[in-house]
Image 1: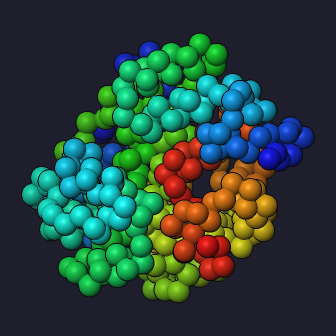
Image 2: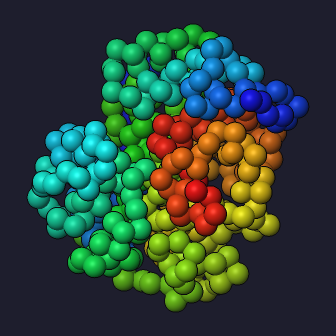
Length: 246
Length: 116
């Protein structure tokens, strides 16, 4: 069992949030669809390491990231292509492009493996930003569990809408029947990781604990201790700083 | 520039950091300053803004703010890394707001046909 301790924050952190972080770390250390537990923990470690990468810093300051050549400062456990995905997504996500993505797909990274990496890097970034905001150290990465990846690729995932194949709401059946909440509208963001269903489920759990429940997304009166306007102001300011159109 | 949401007039420029005051949102200035500090790399500024926000919010509301910052660092990265377009329904609901905020200036608008 992975434990998360935010006592250093000096404020009581609600249980569902702490449990969400512990649950992600437990999920992280287990074998996934395309990566072993050890590889998934290595992806997480590399994503934290990206914050001190000199190449990433130089690229972030450049007019275009492709204008700066060089090698990432890497922990050395993963291929160069995977390290580039991890570092770019963690440190400069606003300037990812379809051409860059096509280059990744032409390397040794499959679309399923890519989506799983995105899930690990982004969900850990969310935990790390939350801890930073709270004023507590980020949780220690867990010890990996043994086992092989499932190599489960849902047949209902189809290309066309995004860069990566996704499962349409109407096609979510069989092992993926529980993938989406029964709502009139499921936004693309909740479908984005569906090529790796466990990552899509992890995103939904994370979103429910950090933001508002999926069922309340379109309810302007849904709130926590912050009211909805305050929540949306913080959310929109983060997205503006991240230069994210979505 | 303003928007009517839940019956409250809000200055949308607060999203772009271009408003003095709260922009019609309770403790809006403190929330924006804290968010910017978390996203930045000035540790002294972060400590200062954290203290300032905690002075005006309940501990529970402060934790909510921290969690929302975490949530949208996930959402933004997933959207940008998977190339998802903005949903038609969301685009219809938020079209005017998006235009006012000039969100099409962001490179990821290229993933939504007709947005950029």
